[in-house]
Length: 130
Image (cartoon, rainbow, N blue to C red; front, side):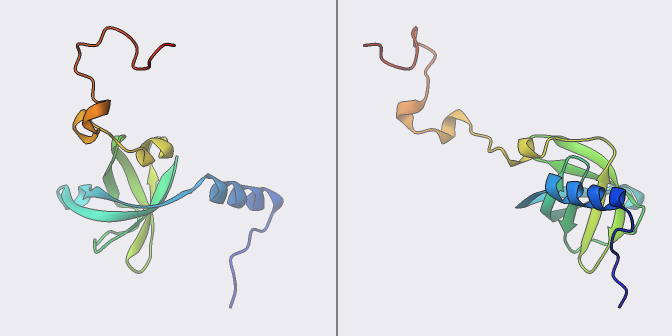
Protein backbone atom coordinates (compact mmCIF):
# COMPACT_ATOMS: atom_id res chain seq x y z
CA UNK A 1 0.00 0.00 0.00
CA UNK A 2 1.34 3.39 -0.95
CA UNK A 3 1.33 5.83 1.99
CA UNK A 4 1.14 9.58 1.51
CA UNK A 5 4.35 10.82 3.08
CA UNK A 6 5.68 14.34 2.61
CA UNK A 7 8.01 14.42 -0.38
CA UNK A 8 9.96 17.55 0.54
CA UNK A 9 11.25 19.22 3.68
CA UNK A 10 8.75 22.06 3.22
CA UNK A 11 5.84 19.63 3.08
CA UNK A 12 7.13 17.81 6.17
CA UNK A 13 7.44 21.06 8.15
CA UNK A 14 3.94 22.13 7.03
CA UNK A 15 2.48 18.75 8.08
CA UNK A 16 4.14 18.94 11.51
CA UNK A 17 3.06 22.52 12.17
CA UNK A 18 -0.48 21.75 11.02
CA UNK A 19 -0.72 18.93 13.54
CA UNK A 20 0.75 21.11 16.31
CA UNK A 21 -1.85 23.86 15.74
CA UNK A 22 -4.82 21.53 16.23
CA UNK A 23 -6.79 21.52 19.44
CA UNK A 24 -8.41 18.17 20.23
CA UNK A 25 -11.77 18.44 21.90
CA UNK A 26 -15.24 16.97 22.04
CA UNK A 27 -18.12 19.40 21.69
CA UNK A 28 -21.13 20.01 19.50
CA UNK A 29 -21.80 22.69 16.92
CA UNK A 30 -24.54 23.56 14.46
CA UNK A 31 -23.63 23.02 10.81
CA UNK A 32 -25.59 24.55 7.94
CA UNK A 33 -25.00 23.15 4.44
CA UNK A 34 -25.64 26.16 2.23
CA UNK A 35 -26.19 24.16 -0.99
CA UNK A 36 -29.19 22.40 0.57
CA UNK A 37 -31.00 25.62 1.41
CA UNK A 38 -29.19 26.07 4.70
CA UNK A 39 -30.43 22.83 6.27
CA UNK A 40 -28.98 22.65 9.78
CA UNK A 41 -27.68 19.66 11.72
CA UNK A 42 -25.77 19.08 14.94
CA UNK A 43 -22.22 17.74 14.49
CA UNK A 44 -19.46 16.74 16.90
CA UNK A 45 -16.27 18.78 16.71
CA UNK A 46 -13.31 16.41 17.13
CA UNK A 47 -10.47 18.85 16.59
CA UNK A 48 -10.20 22.52 15.87
CA UNK A 49 -7.51 24.81 14.52
CA UNK A 50 -7.48 28.48 13.51
CA UNK A 51 -8.05 27.47 9.89
CA UNK A 52 -10.48 24.56 10.11
CA UNK A 53 -12.00 21.64 11.94
CA UNK A 54 -12.72 17.92 11.87
CA UNK A 55 -16.45 17.24 12.24
CA UNK A 56 -18.32 14.02 12.78
CA UNK A 57 -22.00 13.40 12.22
CA UNK A 58 -24.76 11.90 10.14
CA UNK A 59 -24.80 14.72 7.63
CA UNK A 60 -24.65 14.29 3.86
CA UNK A 61 -21.96 16.69 2.67
CA UNK A 62 -19.95 16.67 -0.52
CA UNK A 63 -16.35 17.69 -0.99
CA UNK A 64 -16.26 21.38 -1.95
CA UNK A 65 -19.68 22.17 -0.40
CA UNK A 66 -20.09 25.60 1.19
CA UNK A 67 -21.02 25.33 4.87
CA UNK A 68 -21.47 27.54 7.90
CA UNK A 69 -20.59 26.39 11.42
CA UNK A 70 -21.95 28.03 14.56
CA UNK A 71 -19.17 27.75 17.15
CA UNK A 72 -19.58 28.63 20.83
CA UNK A 73 -18.11 32.07 21.75
CA UNK A 74 -17.15 32.72 18.10
CA UNK A 75 -20.44 32.64 16.20
CA UNK A 76 -21.03 31.62 12.61
CA UNK A 77 -17.98 30.81 10.52
CA UNK A 78 -18.21 30.14 6.78
CA UNK A 79 -16.06 27.50 5.14
CA UNK A 80 -15.80 24.66 2.63
CA UNK A 81 -15.71 20.90 3.04
CA UNK A 82 -12.23 19.84 1.92
CA UNK A 83 -12.47 16.10 2.48
CA UNK A 84 -15.15 13.55 3.31
CA UNK A 85 -14.65 10.19 5.03
CA UNK A 86 -16.93 7.67 6.68
CA UNK A 87 -19.06 9.80 9.00
CA UNK A 88 -16.30 12.43 9.27
CA UNK A 89 -15.32 15.42 7.19
CA UNK A 90 -12.86 18.30 7.23
CA UNK A 91 -13.82 21.94 6.93
CA UNK A 92 -11.47 24.77 5.94
CA UNK A 93 -12.68 28.10 7.32
CA UNK A 94 -12.86 31.23 5.16
CA UNK A 95 -11.34 33.23 8.04
CA UNK A 96 -9.16 32.30 10.98
CA UNK A 97 -10.66 31.86 14.43
CA UNK A 98 -9.33 31.56 17.99
CA UNK A 99 -9.76 27.90 19.01
CA UNK A 100 -9.16 28.79 22.66
CA UNK A 101 -12.18 31.11 22.59
CA UNK A 102 -14.35 28.17 21.54
CA UNK A 103 -13.04 26.13 24.48
CA UNK A 104 -13.80 28.82 27.08
CA UNK A 105 -16.81 28.20 29.26
CA UNK A 106 -19.37 30.97 29.45
CA UNK A 107 -20.37 31.62 33.05
CA UNK A 108 -23.40 33.75 33.80
CA UNK A 109 -24.19 35.36 37.14
CA UNK A 110 -26.87 32.73 37.81
CA UNK A 111 -24.24 29.96 37.50
CA UNK A 112 -22.21 31.43 40.37
CA UNK A 113 -22.84 30.44 43.98
CA UNK A 114 -24.80 33.12 45.89
CA UNK A 115 -21.78 34.26 47.93
CA UNK A 116 -19.87 35.14 44.72
CA UNK A 117 -22.64 37.09 42.97
CA UNK A 118 -22.42 40.86 42.91
CA UNK A 119 -25.56 42.78 43.70
CA UNK A 120 -24.40 46.07 42.24
CA UNK A 121 -24.54 47.74 45.66
CA UNK A 122 -20.89 47.07 46.52
CA UNK A 123 -18.71 50.16 46.57
CA UNK A 124 -15.31 48.63 47.13
CA UNK A 125 -13.28 45.74 45.80
CA UNK A 126 -14.39 42.14 46.21
CA UNK A 127 -11.52 41.36 48.58
CA UNK A 128 -11.05 42.41 52.19
CA UNK A 129 -8.22 44.84 52.97
CA UNK A 130 -6.10 44.16 56.05
